[in-house]
Amino acid sequence: MLQKLLLFTFPLFAGIVVPLPKSDCLSAPICEYPAMTAGYNAPEGYAIRQDWGVVFSGSFIYWQPSEEGLELGQSRLIDSYGNTTGRVLGFSSEFAPGFKGKLGGRTGFDNWDFHAEYTWLYTTHGHASSLQPGAIYFYTPWFYGEYNTEVVLTGDAKAVWKLHTNIVDLVLGRSFFVGRCLVFHPFLGARGDWFFQRYFLEALIDISYNYNAMTRQRSWGMGPRAGLETNFHMGPFHAFGVIGASLLYSTFDLSYATQNLLSALTYAFKDKESYITPDAEISLGMGWGNYFSDHGWHFDLAASYEFQIFWNQNGMRHLVDVINAGSSSNNGNLFFQGLNVTMQFDF
Image: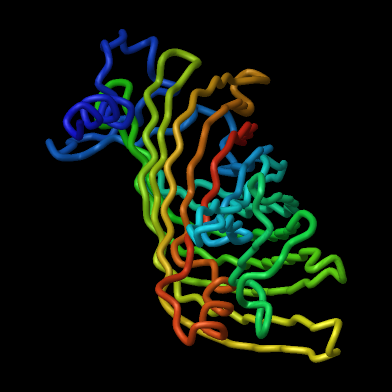
């Protein structure tokens, strides 16, 4: 199975396709350098008449975030003999719109380039779950105290997950040919991210009142980033793939609060933790580009599908596990997947 997967994915990144004539695949003439050594890779770039070396782009993103550990709880049905059957009440999220913005430039030194990119995605997701037919007992780790056990649920359990995502990338790279049509663009830089998460759960218990709990998380991370972008030119069209990874030092500010409406007792906990969190991404797409105003500037329109994973991000579930059980196995991972539609301008 692994061999078949490698055989399928390698051509997408290595550009193993039928060669095209030179005039059909190069987006711009290769710069001519005298007395090149055999191991030199010629830089790739656009043949703009008055090259200011400025690049900016905007992307509409339509992503679905998801995170491990957001399950509402479980329903339990106990028969007359004491046998128990249950069902996990999961949490589902929807796709939501956001954007990316990039501003950069090309240097005069062997076609090295740099850019800063900002990613914004603010979402709110609600989910309601009912017990399995015949079940009346509900258990959730999100409740504390006397309700961190089986309770009689007389209505739906409802949860709301709010996620604010802010990501900034600063990178330096170089585009160069590794064939007549295939271009590699390795890059190295830094990443910073800021996340805000809030998870609110409420349930109607014993026909008496709604019991609820609120967990909040603010986190930020910073660290190095590296990756590779590939482009295979086919006239004005190009197929591309991007892989990247970061290793961030992250800090998490966590808080939990709930109140027993019968006894008027309140419970509040806070925690702050710091550790290393990696992240990775991969995307594949197609694009079209052309020159305008007699090579005065270049425009590119591209669409891609992207996957991202941020490891160990669900500190909220970690906090409630610690205050209820005294320990936690691990934090859940945060995932993104979705469509990018990008317009880029080179001057």
